[in-house]
Amino acid sequence: MVPRAGVTVDICPRDLPIALIGTAGGALALWANAPAEVAIPTALLIVLDIRVRRWHRRT
Image 1 (cartoon, rainbow, N blue to C red):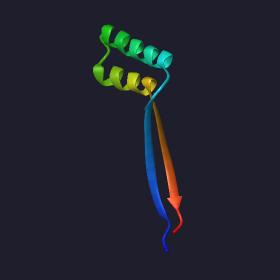
Image 2 (image 1 turned 30 degrees about the vertical axis):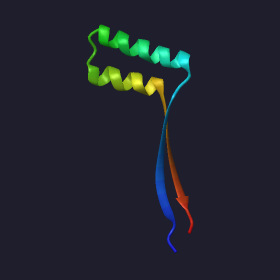
Image 3 (image 1 turned 90 degrees about the vertical axis):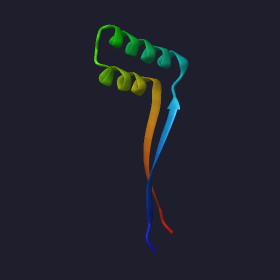
Image 4 (image 1 turned 90 degrees about the horizontal axis):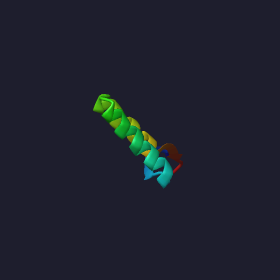
């Protein structure tokens, strides 16, 4: 029997005040002519709660 391994990625929005701060920060960065390739992923990391979990199951 071989143990099974896997990864789960949970993505859920954060509470409203933090989401507003992330959105405002991203908008401010775009308004200040920051590259969109930098501003948008940074704002998404603030707005979303992303958890990566490794697991293994013994069978």
